[in-house]
Length: 245
View 1: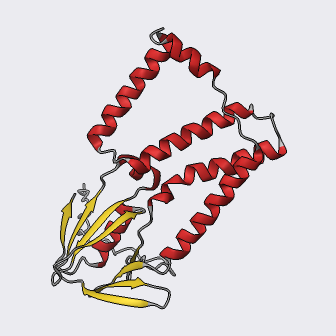
View 2: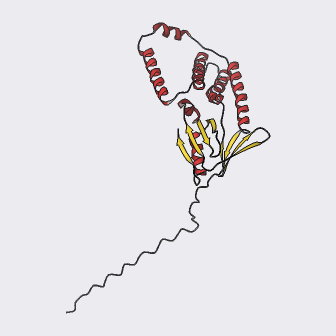
């Protein structure tokens, strides 16, 4: 009687590497920016909510008067926006003061609506009716539109440009340029006003060139976090000291 023998196990041969898909190429590395443009704006730029609401109210009052609310309702909204914007450009709301003011405002509104603490004030506010016609909203929209156009045209000729090895300040309508060295600079980002940061993600950027005694201070830089990240990416290979403010 013959014995049955099992064939030996095949040797462990490593599997061949997968063949790349024809035509598939690896994604290119992210391209570093050649320069970063930094523009600073005046405080009036934070009044853009009034400009936008004036356009909306102008259209509603001009084409559909009374259809989407009374004139006093639109006037009340305009007054509230105006008051908040005046507070934004008049005071600096730090982190601590912003939280305290917000809690105080919530407490006052809650007490005003649900408790009869100041009945005379409630009656007085209820009698106030702020009404403006479409011509008023049109005048405000055109006024702010002209101001914003001048502001945006002006910052096109007055800005800073950061390159790998130097900082350029472009100013004047004839193209005047000031140059500062970029290596070993110190950069400090400051978000001092919470409301301004909420409106336009803006803040202050302070740059100290290594060979200059005076720092370059840029106020109201829109998108301050994005600008800072691009500067770090641009100067990542150089000795840049970053200080958080």
